[in-house]
Amino acid sequence: MVGLFRWFVFVGYLSLFLVLPFFILWDTLGLILGTTLLLTVLTLMAYRAPEKILNALSARPLPITHHEAIHFMVKEYARRLEIVPPKIESIESTALNAAIFGLNPKRTYLVLTTGLIQTLSRPEVSAILARTLTELWSGSAINETWYARLSSVADSLLAHEYDEKRRRQMASFLSALLLFPFLIVPRYLLAKRKSDEELDKLSLSLCKNPRTFTEALQKLGAYKSRFPLSVPFSTSFLFLTRPQQPLRWLGLLFPSGSLSVRLQLLKRPS
Image (tube, rainbow, N blue to C red; front, side, top):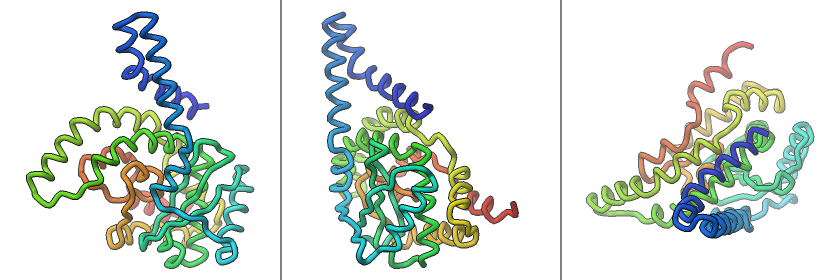
């Protein structure tokens, strides 16, 4: 219910830009026009949203014939969490990361990097799967998907690489000026309902291997800078560990807890 309430507040925020100006200008007629525009925007955001995200990530289905254990673990954890198992996809990357998204709880997608599948041991992969599925269980994945669709307007502005320092500084200034005020409020409206620490504890109860779970998270943190994940900006919010961003100020849109603090909490005797 909390997640649904936040979504309605998010829609109310969008109405400030899409409905209120028309209402001020043309009263009832403006209200009708603005509401129509708002509904159109929401419909376009939702239409084939998972497929558009998969296309942006260049993801492809993870074949069950070669990865039967992963498919089994996902189904088992989903059964314990009493959620519908997501479809499993993969993306070619040496990075160690995983993402989960979808607007319908009965039709979601889990994306794993090939680096994660090939580098981590089976128990470590199992621990990461448990942690990723808790994001779906908590309801965070759905709101994050809405935010990914909203922030896709920024992808075209942030996709270019700048060679000259002056152009790079200008791009940073213009991006902050245009995008930050529009994206920062929805980011916190659609933020997680449960903290990373709470979801870590739930993940431990699923995989029942604290040491392996801690080591898996440590590897994700250690490999983050060695093998950075390159994905469109709008999809960054869907991943377990946040990919590096092209501009520094974008880090303010990722209010997740410190990994080092989380690891210290996991190492404490319960």
